[in-house]
Structure formats: C-alpha cells, structure tokens
Image (cartoon, rainbow, N blue to C red; front, top):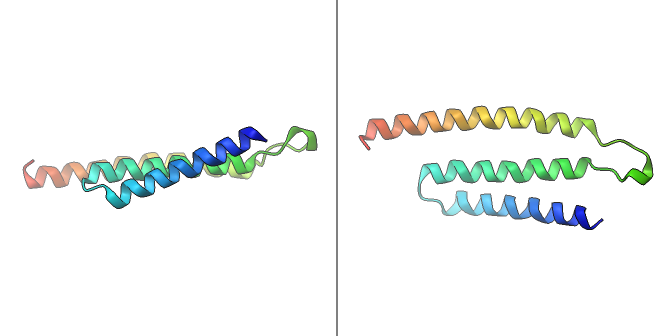
Length: 95
C-alpha cells in the first residue's frame, strides 16, 4: 500500500512539475521538455492505476498497459515533430 501512495505522489509531482514548466517556461525547448515530463507523469499514473493486489488473484489491467505503450510511441513521434519545428523556427530566425 505504501508503494501505491509513493507512485501516486510521484505521478502527481511529475504532472505538477510539467504543468509549472509549461506555464512558466519562456523558451520553446523548455516547454517541449515540460510536456514530456507531464506525459511521463500521466503514464506513471496509468500504470499505477492498472495495478491490482496479488491477494485478489487478478492480473493487472492489460488495456491500460496497452494504452501506455501506444502513448509512448505517440509521445516520441510528437516530440520529434516538435523538435523539428523548433529547429525550423530557429533556422528561419537565424539563431
């Protein structure tokens, strides 16, 4: 039970830290990193919610695990696209 509270707390901390970074980050790269941190917190929350105690005899929820795996692929693709756009913006600005 203690580990579940620890994982929920860590997920909330990551989501909050990412939200703060998006809200306060002036640079675009910092905002992209903050969105990735927020996504990691959401993935941790979903994996933690999929857990079921062994005493109940039920396996973990495989649908949430599949959603997390799909989300990871989408997050990597979106990050690559955002970094490519940032590179184009900086190249056009001459920085």
